[in-house]
Image 1 (cartoon, rainbow, N blue to C red):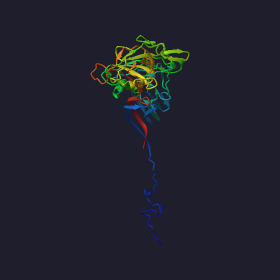
Image 2: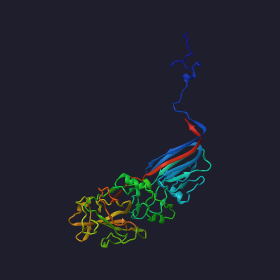
Image 3: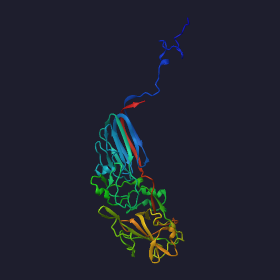
Image 4: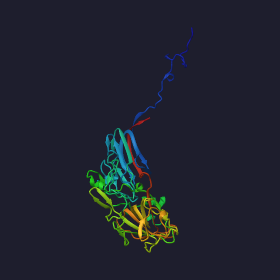
Length: 436
């Protein structure tokens, strides 16, 4: 008879004997095990600084747990930044949360028990959205916090041919269109910068203590009485960042810029009533029925400060006349700079050059002939709401001037508006959570 030793089980042999050890025969699952832990832990979550593109969100928390919210603080450069809070079945505002613009409009600029409140624009250009209950706000199953950027793309410092704008994604709509053309901005830090077409110059505008604002009524807000509206600019800070292409004006004699009054059909005594697009309408335009027609403003660029129409622009001396804005060529929004003052008259509608005693179309820089052509005329849409002082463009190769005077073309700096999130701070107590 064969004797079998069951005291030491071996692979392939009978393991049903009671002497077989549990360690040798146990089946171990591959998946990790988790358990519910009850423990009171103080937790602080911090995010930032960061840039948040349009249609994106920062998911600060999304957890299945029990605990208490002590405080939430979001510091951002844009009053339209959405802050969304979900505690169990509670949602602070659907679909995407609440903004500083809404809170400040409703007068919630001081502590509110178990409600968000906001602090208005700080000296560094930021807004602060806060949630800070006197007693910690308890939740038993779930906590979720999102910070969102739902801004739509818009052309900055540009014309608005309909005088209408509506926000999307549950955001409130501005009562005015404060980011369109028609206004000015004082940027003290830019006074001594020679060129506008640099990243430093663009960032100087973004970080400017005073934000750009145009008092142009938003007809969408007036036409829909049920629409939630706020008196804030959605394109402040990084969302309003532009890039500038400066026009070279170095030469023996410098061009001289003269603005007409807004809506006037003459500038500097020159009759422009024969030009069809030079409409005599008040800024920013007129509404008839549901049709809005924007205003116009004329600008003459003379060859020099004698303000003589027949004097040519000194292209031989170094002025890049080929880069001058012209109808159908590079008719982007424009900016005129006089030291620390920036003027945004809108988009070039038509351009002309003075030849043979009349203004003739100026389709592009290559058509300018210094032997026969003189001053250039720009028809701007909608123009400025005032007449700036006359300005002599400076030689942008000379770095020893008291102030720099120039003009250029504007582009949005990014494909979509970005929001700067300086900091997100969430303080909470975690009392029950899954571990493992």
